[in-house]
Image 1 (spheres, rainbow, N blue to C red):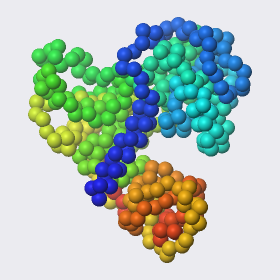
Image 2 (cartoon, one colour):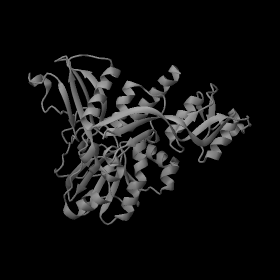
Image 3 (tube, helix red, strand yellow):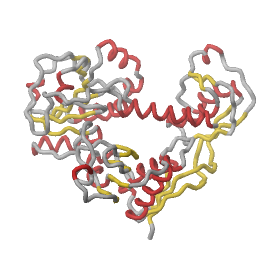
Image 4 (cartoon, rainbow, N blue to C red):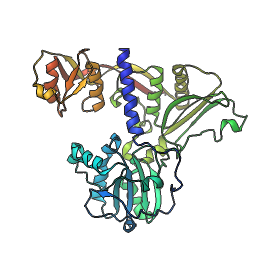
Length: 418
């Protein structure tokens, strides 16, 4: 089990790294970097593919809202957001031009779009600027998606993908003004207002604040300051529910995927606790939470995390705890072995055992949370599938069937105190 936990944690860290830091950028921001309000000078030439096939002239798009959506083929969030961007482009084509921008070469992008059935099904065909250097220098970033709003030759917003909404596009088009959360991958949260080494008045304490414009999202970090020897514990721009989840992950790590179905909110206003993607950047400004704590005493991470949790409980008037609760789930259970054609299995992905299969199936999100009742140590090879019946047809070769049901599973409860 310990080996599985290590494998699971390593895999989650890999996924987070791919999604959050899908594109590595230089640590030093280029001199050509633009800020909000600056004049944007289009490149003299671009390498373009897809879209209508007509050459893009960024200079002639000054009458439209231009949205640069920086992406790469490793970024799952980028791919998931593309159908939404295509729908906005189709609906508002007279007012907006959405352009995908990547540093990757044409061969890589050709292969990516040719092999992605999800994007084909959703008829994604936005123009793509590939092998880009110029735009990346003007809008440096470390993570994708990274979004820039341009209008009438000016930089109007440098923000996150959630801010690309019909409401925001129309507001900018009509008023020439828009205020969106700043995405600055080189920014840094600082709730104290000045560095610890610049004052002797700050000895220790707790600071809780809302959204920090320009500071990237950061989960719980516990770090010793080399100059003051103080222990700084912090997180920035997180929803209450995500903050509670990553704090609990330090207190008692789980060996399962923390799916939304395993979060129970006993609160009056759900929007206040969970990031509402449909509201774009507006939600972050209203509800995101940032936190800093300074301590003289160094403690184990699990103990320090418990103190952070107690701070949130006290200041927010909530409590959180883990319990077993009956919820809808997909149960992997034994069944009679039924042979499966070898040519089908030869095309599949190999899972080390049923526990790894359960985790990977959980991450796929096609079914409710997965409960492994097989506990098989046998390697399992499964090809791609779309339905539960197709999944079961392959599982049968290993004496496993997946059935929908309700079972007790661990959930995290966040509850407001009356």
